[in-house]
Length: 394
Image (cartoon, rainbow, N blue to C red; front, side, top):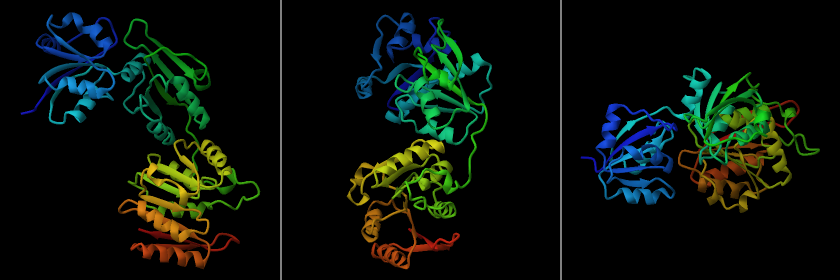
């Protein structure tokens, strides 16, 4: 038998709620209720006089503690409680609980309805108290229709500014404010207009692509910004693509790019694997500007640049990788390989581009001294450049 029973009821923001008979019966038969202050205003007249009310507010740990003495609780939430909603939180915190959900429309559904916009193919993301990552992924994937749940810090203006910063001016923004309320508004905005507009909360947006963003499978070197006078300090496009293929990035979660210089490997990886967390290390301060400029040029937000000597970095601060590309080693290749394998997740891969027989031997010896093995290598010759040996260790 489950230790708790939650009945979770989704509400719109309207002052006149409609409830199905089974929902009314659940409310009238309840003794303990929970929700936000706005929810209490909407349903207080339906609850019994001796009802216990538990506000849902941060920190949520205090709310969970207040739930403990009670077996049955009726919870009110906004919209669809299983759509980035409180029912998902209850499933996580009370995995053995019995949960029944009675949803209302969520805000993105309401906005699509107001626009008469078919939304069956819409990709939904939330930046409400969350990082930008899922929105970044949807943009990099050129999704045609993106629904975004916002908050006060990541609202329509901030979303529009980020999109323009990374070259995604090919979308139009549909904005819904106070949806379900008598004062609701729906607007269509160009992104440059949205940046300088004030908005009421709560709000949500739908982004619709007007034309696809051009993508290259393999970015030519001359399109990147380079270190001044050092245009050859970049991983050439054929080498870059083969290196990415050898890293086996499908299904991987975190990649380290050690010695990123212009950021070409990180950017190409992000374009093909947008869900990948990419941490890029480089000791040259001028590379900070290069990574930022190139990431904006090719529309790849979300790459974390670390300007520091990799051998002196506090690597505990970063998620451990399951793929590492070594683009530069500063003469400390053996020590670097040992440090990387100390942090590499089980089953992870390391790929190194060697431009000399000495570095090839050093890398191989360092890998073997760590009890690991070289599993593959390829030699590429490009134009008049020296042959490059691309080596993969696991």
